[in-house]
Image (cartoon, rainbow, N blue to C red; front, side, top):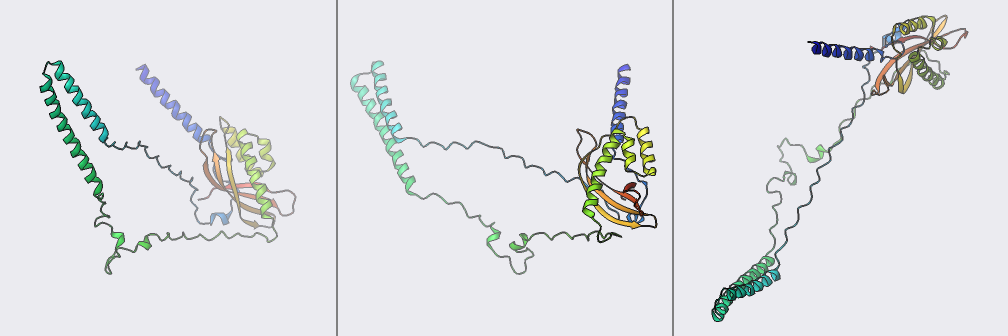
Length: 302
């Protein structure tokens, strides 16, 4: 009974550790929508979460079987020499058994004649076999359907149709930005946005609230600080790859709101496989220019 309780307790402990590890494998903000939300992003068509690329199965190497050794043809001279030695051996055997010289010579002569006849027959078959051409294999019998054109009423497609490439997938229309000025430096803006994304993930993992305060609005900072205080262990977020797309900029009387879509791969543990992610960060900046861009909200895509 004690052993059973120990096993049950171990299973519960392992399950709890797995749940804890899964719970801590979250990006900054806990993987939820917080702070400012963009209505334009909410009206975008539902976008499925990116899936990791399937690994291509490597074909199993074909088993290497050693080539079968070619059968060796019997040597004609080997047979003749063997027959001669056999005749001499029989003669010696007859002499050892006390059979007279005349009788022994007669028996040896008879055996030698039989052996010579066998050798002559072997040579005759060898010469006859070389003179006949080898049999050719049948040319696919009657199954070579590719050598005959299909009949007029046949439903079988032409051979060429089997080699036609598949139809190209329909390209989805590119996203149409909203409210982005023509002279806006998107390349520099997105480069800084990706840098701040990685920096925020590092500060989130370490629980560095002072660094988080540097580039978040008070609303987002309060939410992240509360989540950090509630967790029991530090998170781990290794940004393996990241890409950013400016969806659009909304302008009000007091501020700008730029929605940036981040996609990429994140490792939730040092020994874990990278997992895909995508979410929108809503960055805000006062119209009067009193401060720079700050993270005003994280918006999860439906």
